[in-house]
Image (tube, rainbow, N blue to C red):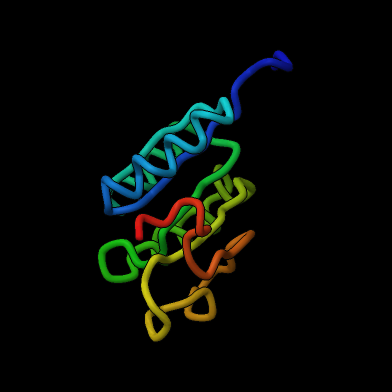
Amino acid sequence: MPTNALQKVVIVNGSTDTLGLVETALDAGHYDVVSVESSAHAYSQIKRVQPNLVILCVCIEDAAGFDVLSMLKLDEETRDIPVLTYTTQPEGHPTERDAPEPADAVLRSMPPALRMN
């Protein structure tokens, strides 16, 4: 692979605003970004794209992000793809402790620079 090839990142979040914000931040860092707005399409897109990193909102569609995480970590073709999970939900919602399969990295919430408050 050429050294100047863009790193591929798949972002999974049900909010188009959040997807746009994260995509803009990553585009500035010269990443090849694929945004997925539905947990129903996340697994197939990630498997097709084979990204260098997945940024996954675990509370997408009532915690369906945990299902996506489990499928990725149980599949030989995707288990080695690093997955960073996060949530924009307040405490009391499902967390990484509730995940059947562990993520590679966890953010408790979006970084302040990416928050829309």
